Amino acid sequence: MKTDPRMYLAVDNCFASKRWTKPAEWMNLLKSMGVNYVEASADNECDPLYMSREYLERWVGEVKSESEKTGVKVANLYSGHGTYTTLGLTHHDKSVRDRIQREWIEPMAEIAASIGAGIGFYCHAFSDSTLQNPTVYREMEAELFARLAKIALHCRDLGILAPGVEQMYTPHQIPWTIEGSKRLLKEVYSLFASPFYLTLDTGHQSGQRKFRKPDALAIDEMAENCLRGEPDSCWLGSQSAYDLFVEMIRTTDEKRAGIRERILEEMKRYPYLFADNTDSDTYRWLEELGCYSPIIHLQQTTGESSSHQPFTEEYNRKGTIFGEPVLRALEKAYRAPGSSEEGMPPKCGEIYLTLEIFSGTSEMNTAILRKIQESVQYWRKFIPEDGMKLSQVLKNLEK
Image (cartoon, rainbow, N blue to C red):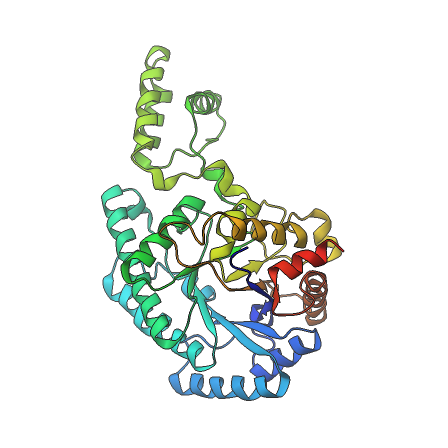
């Protein structure tokens, strides 16, 4: 491998939200579990939209002080549910887009830089009216890329080397496909040559299978199902395609084939609404884009949903995410020909494998801590020491 990244095991402190909220509390808990690196979630009392500047200055001071005491370092800051629940950077009102960029992302980046951390986020979504209009969609997409490029430039000026956006799994939250992710990285990097990356999440391949483009046979089968009173069974993308489908099932048999062809043509106008088969494969994502993902969010999943489950024996029995396949997939990404794919940012020199495990509102504290501890123990079998080169991690697998 021309680039042999250093590997770190980290934990997102979202598990501690509303329970262990002071830096001293979550740092000491993680230290007791053998964790040296943490991803600080905005949900755990450090969100610029909710917290005052004065409070955040005190928070930074506490983080620095407690980091010296415990040896636990905040490796990255990350957005939480607050900005995830809005249209954010692709809001239909420019003032909202500006506010998210100026009053959330930029201050968060400045906080990250002040404690020597990186930053990742997800702060945008496309409304249905935008998705239904290819021209408007492309305009909003281009503006998003431009904003991300400016954010990357701002981060570079602050000394943050690898800012990034999280990969998602539905059409209204890009990037959600492998090719779409590559395009985003290339477009953003091309504007100012400031590196910008992805955060891959091992559970964010659970939705793409619902949005695959149907062929003629699948459309005919869906029509037959609807005529029998059964619900729609495949994704057609745009409302205009669904309107044609309604016309198809209401017309005579001899006219259905013609309308079906019109549906197939209509779907071609909306390529951004459809996924490929490989987009549902977590390991394919890692093989193709793992080298452009300085943060990889780890969650156990059956592949049916993104539930952010732990890596305990119970969940691992039913799960699809395991240490060795993840690392082998990363090896493939770094062994791909060339230093990097044309137009892409440089391959990452560090990767933080970051456990992102959620806690239930009624879940007992002891159960939460137990599942985090067991998850850390599972992944420590693969990353026994932080900072190991990927090549050394792989050699250990062969022993």
